[in-house]
Image 1 (cartoon, helix red, strand yellow):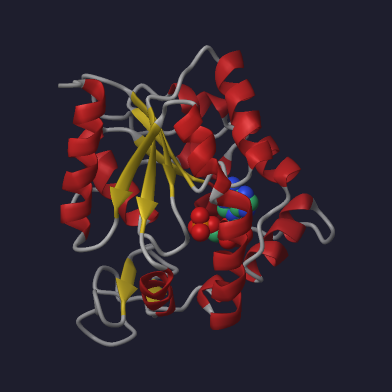
Image 2: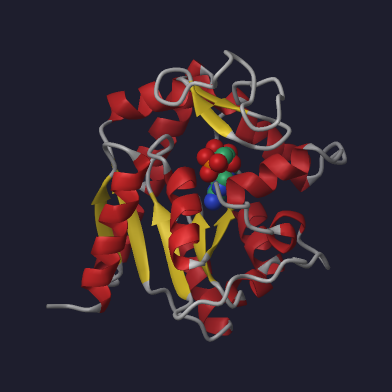
Length: 250
Ligand code: AMP
C-alpha cells in the first residue's frame, strides 16, 4: 500500500503547507471527478493519484477534517457540519470560499483532482472563474456512473476508521476483525451521512443539483464518462484508458 499523500495545505487551508513535496510527474493533470455519492470517487481519486501523481482535493475531506476542531457556534463551518451530517449540500458561498482560500493547491506541481467539487452549477461557474484568474485549465471531467441500487448498497455498508481514515465495506471490503481497522486497530464507524435517511437526501440532491453538471461539462467538451461497476482496479484502468484516448485521439 502506498503512503497517503501529504494534503496539509488542502485540509487545513490558511498558511498551512505540505511538507512532503509531490512526486515528479511528466504531466500535471487538472481533473474534476464527478459522480453520485457511493460511486467510489474517493477510492478512484486515491488510485488515480498513485497512477498520475495528481493531488486528490476532496471538499468533503476538508469538512470532515474540520470536525476534529471546534467550530464556533453559528459560524459557516458549524453550519456546514450540520448540513453535512443531514446529507444536505453545504451552502455554495461556503464551499466556494473554501476553494478560493486554497487556490494555491490548484498550482500543485503534481497536478490536482477535484473530488466532490463542483456540485452545483453556481460552483461550476465559480470554478471556471477561479481557474481563469489563476490562468489554469481543466484537462477533463471524469463522470463516474452507477445505478442507484448499487450506490445504496455501497454507501450503507461503508465503514471508516476515524483515526487513520482507512475505508472498509461490510461486504465488499470487510476488515479482518469486524469493526476493527486493519491498518491501525481503531474502532470503525459509520459516517453520519451514510445513515439511511441521509443517503436518501444525498441521492436526491445529486439528481437535482449535481447531475446537470454532466451536460454542462459535455457542452464544454471536457466530459469523460466511465462506468463504475466492478473492482476499483478495473475502474481505474478504464479511467486511464479513457484519459489516454482523450489526450491521444486515434
Ligand atoms: P463527500 O465526501 O464528497 O461525499 O462530501 C460529504 C459532504 O460534504 C456532502 O454530503 C456535503 O454535505 C458536503 N460537501 C462536500 N463537497 C461539497 C460541495 N462541493 N458542495 C456542497 N457540499 C459539499
